[in-house]
Length: 439
View 1 (cartoon, rainbow, N blue to C red):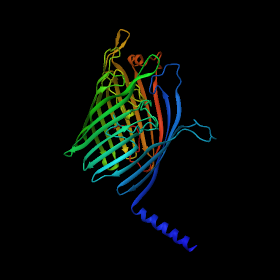
View 2: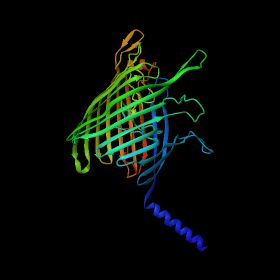
View 3: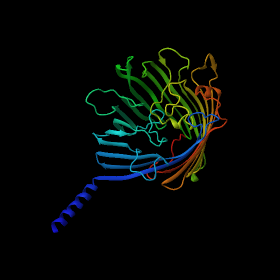
View 4: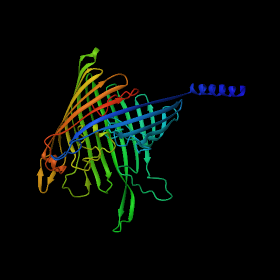
């Protein structure tokens, strides 16, 4: 008995000794969102019925941290209320969202390997897709060199469906086979912040013969070169913008020549700084190039935001560039105005207005249609209940044009195209208490 007691004391001593050099933490989040959809994502016709449901995401995050090493795992369960019976043995909704290890290699240099989020700038091109309950993560090798305000990140990913004895053909949809990127960020003076990005996106392609046998396969690469962030701060006024250009080949072998450009100005009015009472006004535009819908030839002019959190841009009803909608199409011009009023640090209201039109020409048969797509209004309210819990809700309505109806091939569209939601957000350890919003 005495020997067992000594062993136990020794084990406890080793445990506390290790704790002095390492930190282990567990946290998590739960998001519950009820939605009403009557024209969300796609116009609905008069005979269509509205959809209503409640979705939920639960994540448990565990982190083990030492002086020169960090290990992180995030497990998530994403489901719709009622999609499994009350009594069940198992279901397919549990998954690994992130699982990576990060090692310090010399001064200011780290290497992170594994499944991880890539979330940069305003998430227009690379985002963690936080609005979608499932989110987005990459299987990636990421190297980071950071010193003061300068950040240099670069990395690569190479994907396969499974372990094999031969062959490398990749079939998982909407995924790159291989990708490489470099991103640089810095500050000039104290007022100008900028970043530069290069992303090389490689998609699997194949050529089939009449017997449906693959006769040729490989990777076609499209490059994106951009200035994701260019921001100038002058008192309470912020001037910002971004620009991306795409070139190379698309998966079908066409030459790519496309761009995405945006400029905006924001101004903040402080009514009562002590109470946090303020109003932020933003006006701007974004142009994503597109290809005429009657175009022929070997040039693809349609910009693709690829792996961005596109819900936060171009209207919250997700008609454009979310889930593949409007990809490889006529492009988009978005003129917008945003207003956010903070009643106090715990309560805000916002109203956004978007005027949409196409970049490329739109034809229906031989008739050229007007480029106007319509107007969308988005109202959002957010309230911090306490340090751990917040509530967010919104209502949006689209006033679509005949061109929008023609592009989506909608017959007899309903007079009202709208969407609403209310969301409970439990994030006790996260700074971002609201989801899917740009201000």
